[in-house]
Structure formats: C-alpha cells, structure tokens
Length: 159
Image 1 (tube, rainbow, N blue to C red):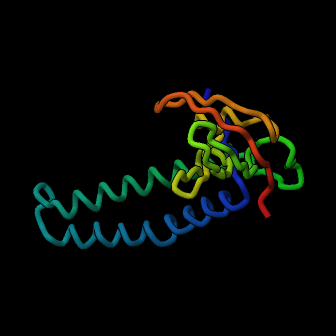
Image 2: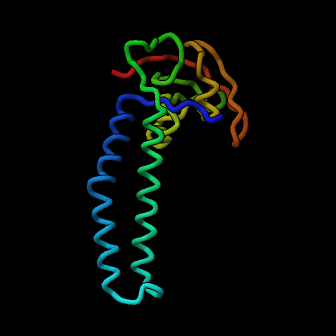
Image 3: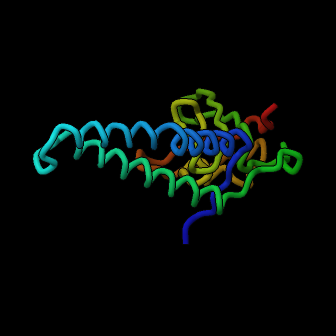
C-alpha cells in the first residue's frame, strides 16, 4: 500500500493549476503539432509525428496522474497544525551534529518535495525520522549517504 498523499494549500493549488494548463492549453498545442506533422506526408517515417504522439501520450499520462492524486489527497488544515511537534507542514531548523551547521527544512508531502528549496518529503529518510519529534530531540537518520545525527532546534508553522 502506498503512503497517503498529503498536500499543503499551495501544493493543491499548484496541482490544480497544472491540471488546468494541461487540459486547456497543452492538449491543444500538442493536437496542433500532430495535425501539422500529419501534413508532412508518410506517417511511417515521420519523426515529427512520432514525437508529437509521444508528447500527447505523456501529457495524457500526466493528466491522469494528477487527477488520481487530487482524488486521494488530504489537504492540510493549517488551523490543526501544531508548532510543538514535527508534522507535514512544519518548518524545522536542525543542527547537523557532525558538521556543526544549521539547516532548515519544510516537511511536505511527497508530491511537493523540492530538495533545492529545502522542501523535503515526509517519506524521505530525514522526513520520516523527524515526524512526531519535538524541539530539543536528537535524531539519527539512516540515508543512502550514511548515518547522520541532527538536533531539532526549532519547529514553526508557515505564515
């Protein structure tokens, strides 16, 4: 069984916006490319047609994927979030005990993770280790790169 899909309000809006774009803009653009490629003649050796058909298939697959996510997603209610325990939606400042450096992560559902923006999934090794913990706790994270110890300095909620 897969993990439940948890979305922030921002993540929900982003998925809804992407779905709207794919259905109202992208589908039409791809259909036009298919039409233009058909005009080139023989479809058996028409790379433009093949590429447009592949793009259409990928667009339709993405639409189905987003629709399924939206059907089964739970959207965080910010009024129910707590700042004394790490949960999806928390912003957590950590001390990397080995490097003596601080880092801040926002814990999000897996569909919203963006490590470059320090938005980590609740299903990632660090995210899993943090869930349910409190400020002052030290956690050990087993990740592909080794084992890391972090101390939770603060937990706060998004504004």
